[in-house]
Image (tube, one colour):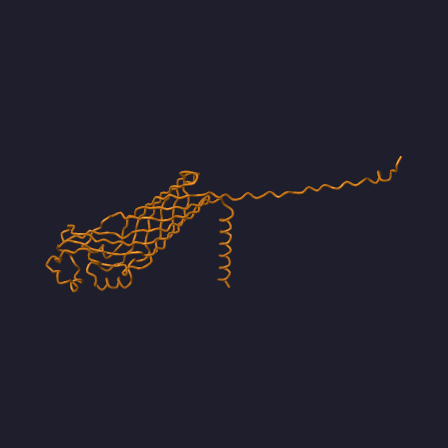
Length: 294
């Protein structure tokens, strides 16, 4: 009974909110497209403890996305699905710290973020907003490759049993041959879905009566380890030559520029009700009716 009452109260509040949003405020609708760049970073415990890797910072392309927005007097909603490329790259270093190659990770998602905008500056032609929301993402492609020259590297002792014949253990490391685009992980080793939380700032400029230019800066943090459970178990059993056990989360900063067409819809003015005035009918007076003709 209590749960039913709570559900009814929640539905009633939703109806009141929808009625308030739909009918009581002026609204601005916008539809457009955007493109941008991404700076990825991986919180990877395994790589952070692996002496063979050193952090490398890169920029990746966010090729295209579509945005649909609704702006109200004090806040707004934004739906902006698009393609994003994330995954951090790393330098491969030898046992003396010299760079010998690179490990490349690319995770391409179709991201579907839903965000709320809260205006910090709200002018007729210009708005600056704080943005927060969540984003569901569908994996389109995923791959992790490694390329390095022949050199002496520090491998964990637990990896020695799976070393190929071309890898030679030595007193100060493992002498490894040249490796060209060795596949560490494929799409099947990554989860098909991901969930991000986002926070950022956005500015909207009304360039004309019909067109708007937007600049959007967001940071996105992945809530799930992008790798499948089976692949993580494989790493935990030291069955992967270039990976060590540890959790991993993807983080990326995204800067986009967009153009959209917008239209302002104002609430209709209520028609004033016409009031009829009561005008009493005039009847002949009794005195005049009693008077006969002269």
